Image (cartoon, rainbow, N blue to C red; front, side):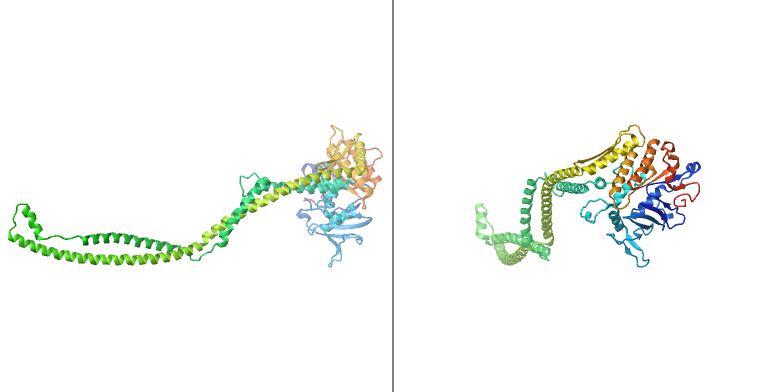
Length: 582
């Protein structure tokens, strides 16, 4: 049980609790409710402080700069011993423990400077799980397991903004389904381990779906993605990769490849020029040789014969002139023959020289081409390498897809088998826990009947998705019945755990649980909390506004005011829990 909540700041109004039923009352004056927009009286802050001392995060109020360096202390019983637990709003990871911790499994350490027992937040929540709910260290073997912070949040529900009052099985808005299943199964004494295994199967199924999605995407396009198609594609790509690898392995990079290539091209051009020059010179040579062979016939007898045949007789002067011309012609022919002979010799020499140059250049070019054939340029090698790497990447992608698809098909079959086996095991286990199930159902039924005169229904089933919980109270038209479902469920849990818990159980409700509830049901709920906490041995703490107390609907023997342990008021500045306003 909780003995008190206190603080190192003198303005704070210490709250001391009693065993059984406790009420923290908030009184508001009409004047203040109309115009006061400052922080409230501290009802929700009290619950926030309790959570904080039990290892929870700082809530909205405790995160305010006005509360920096405040140290809150919770006096609480754990396994028959009283402890004082202190936690500072700045140094939140150091919890100070006062009390005998010698028999704790997870022990605090001694601060060398102060000599006090301190424990970090993570170890503190683990220690509380063991001390209050017997959460065993071996539970860490499970990926998903009940945790103290989740469990305690069913006994100390936070304010409505956190989603603590959405339904009995959920204690905050973003709580995952698996977390609800595991912690509610644990609280009800059922096989929570099956809920854990269920979630592991769901995780595996999620991974398989991701694997399947990866099979249908990637660098290979227009591919159906069946095992047969992927295997065929893998074989083709493997052969292509081997074919590309051989020239790569034999490839030799010449550092002056491009210069050699330019030299070879230059020699080719030179050779072509030599050949073209020789062709032209050979044509000229042929013409000169033909000219040299021509016979130059210019004898005077032939000229005279021509004239005689024409009936003409040349005079002696003409004959003399012809002899002079003939003599001149002979000299010209002789000179021409000498010129042609010299030109023919010169051209033949040029042709011979060029043929030697062609032969020499051809040999040099052959050597260069041999080098080019046996080597390659770096760019060419890089391109070959890039093409090969692309093929390897495609091969790797297809191999991964093939492997993933096989994993998916094998995993899918395996999950189906494991799911059916787990489903049957969970159902059998639930049947074997018939007593725990019936006790919870009957207790809930009796509590709902106490409030609405009709038994409610707590349904506990095993579905394909794991545990399935539901509550129902047939009372149409009644206001706030949703909150009363939560109330009955929480009281039922408190009763069950009061019997078996090694530390006294406490149940705390914020005033929001009574919002919109019919006056009669609200009165019955408060009386039920008082009687059950007294009979079953758990502590019940609630906060409530003074103007919402159903005084006219209480039984005559029930004196509500006797259970008020602290009254908070806005009639004065220091009347709230913190003793300050901001």
